[in-house]
Structure formats: C-alpha cells, structure tokens
Length: 413
Image 1 (tube, rainbow, N blue to C red):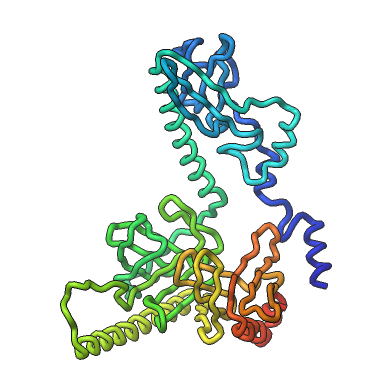
Image 2 (tube, rainbow, N blue to C red):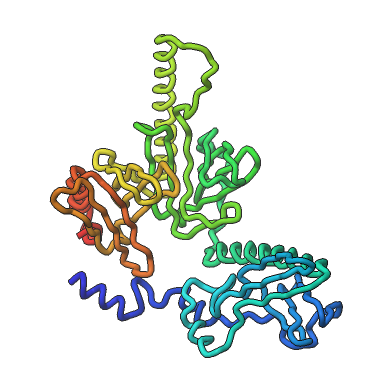
C-alpha cells in the first residue's frame, strides 16, 4: 500500500505538490538579453575596442568590425596573459542554458537551445594592454556584483511576510538576558535579550539588531537542557524562512554557555580545592540556566496556547554523521534532531515516507540510516556509520510513536 501511494503521487507530479518551483522557473526562463536594439548601445563605444557596459551588465566585443554584445551571465571566466609584446584576453562562456541566472533544473531551456550554435571562447590580442587590462578588471567586478545580487534574489525568493509583532502592554515582560543567538544577526557572536510578547518573541542584541519570531511561524519548538553538553538552548524550527542578515534561515536558536570552552594556561597551577570549587560553580550555573530556560518555555506555551516544546530523549539517542561531522542525534515526540553543532538536523516525523536501514550485514559493526521524505523533490537524509549495538535504540522511537498518535506512527512504519 505504501508503494502504491508513492506511485500515485509520482504520477500526479512528483512528491508532495505538483511541479517543482525550479522546473516551472526553468520553463519560463528566457535567454538573457543585453540590448533590445542596436540603438541602445552606449555612445562612447569604439568599434575596434572591447567595452564593458556596467549599467546593462554586458560586454561588447569587436567581431569583424561589428560590436557583438554578451550578457555577463553568459561569461564563465576571463583570463589575461602576456606573450612577448602582445597582451591576450581570453573570455570563456558558459554552455547554453547555464550561467548565473540559470535554475538548477535547466532542462527545458537546454531543449530550447540545443539546435542553436554557441560560442565557447573568444581570445583577443593587442599591442597596447591598457584597454584589455581595463576590460579584464571590469568583467571581474561586474560578474562579482551580478553573482552577489543573484544570490540575494535567490535567498529572498519564497519569503512569506510575517504578521507584525504585538508588544506586551504595561505588564511584566518575561525575558532571558545575556543569551546568544544562532545564526548571529551581524555575522559576529554577540549577546542580547530574548523577550516574550503577545504573539511571538523578540531578540535584541547588544548592538541593536532585532529579530522577531511569531507563534504562527513556529512549526517545532525544542528545549534541550545542558546535561552532557556545554550549552542550554531553545530552538525554533519555522514554517517559512526569515531573513537574518543577508541569508534566509529556517532554524533559529538561543543558547547560553554553562561551561567555559577554553582556559588560559598561564594562570598558574591550581590545586584540588580550586578545581572542586570551579565544578560547584559550573553545576550551580547549569542548574540555574536550565531552570530559567525551562521557565521561559513554559511561559511561551501559556502565552501562545497552541505551542508545545519537545525535549529530546537522550536515552534513545545515537551517534551518526548526518552532515560533515559525527554528532549525537536524538529523537523527540515529533522529530529527529541534532541541535548542538550547526548545520542542525531537524527531521519531522510527519514528513517521513520511509526509513531504510542499509549495510546491515553479518560481520559489520556499523550501518547507515536513510530517511526518505514524502516530498520526493526533497533530498533524502543519510546518517552514516552507527554502531550496530545502537540499532535497537534507533527502532525504539517507532514503538514510542505508536503510543503517541495514529497519524504519527505511519510515517515510520
């Protein structure tokens, strides 16, 4: 039945919701055009020299006495070299359908251009290097600027406007002070204050940056106390990503370090009494911060009326490499998470189609776990190299999900 349902979704258009946005964008994409007509050329051009039009993001190259414009998105790279008394400028072009503005799935555009001729490279030679040197520098500058602008547009694509944050009135505002935020609003680590308001939370850093999160945009909320880790944290996994700095993020985390990660070696030799006193201070700080974060989570649940915080089950956790490093992955009631080392892992159980165990062979001490999502346009999650003795604990969340609810256990069945 699971296979038949997956085949029905594939027949309807791939995974969870018809054609993907990338495929539709590729079908609607047109060939980049620098100028609509010959009259639009800049007046200061010379028909025997190259010219870079920074306003229209085009490079005009003389070919048989005629200036031929090339849009900056069609240029792959440019190199300059000197041999004897000549200076050479080589411009390499992208294949048809590729470039700065091309989507990931450019197959429709490739089909449109497959019968057309294309230029792969152009090499220019001159005795006077001044114009070619200027062209080389301007092409790099215009291309860098176009790449940056294209990246910003890509980051802002799909953004959903949040409702305004309604500030709390004259009553007492519940706050967490001296907390850190990840990702950092200004790109650098800084502390700030997290405040609870009528329909969301606001983080204000010491530098004045503000980040607002509304209750309606919170899909998952996690509270992870500091037990064997060096931080206590509150983590929000959002429905729709928000812009923090110049990038779009779907996960926002607030934390406090309860253990110093580094220690100066020139402080002199310490005795057993100093180490015991330091351990007691760290234990008291850990207990106090755990209590403050838990109290803030309870206040947020009461304020929203719908949000419930999940706490990871440490006894059911296992070591796995879902990203580039090995980390400790733990299940919660609604998700499978790793919240200590970014990039974080948050896999909602409701989004899972099937969980597949690989390399379970007699004689091997490790196996792989592959999570396939209901949306087949989304890449599967692969967690590698787990100890075979942990297989029973990996299966435990499935039995727990059976007890939680009828709709939740089907995703792991």
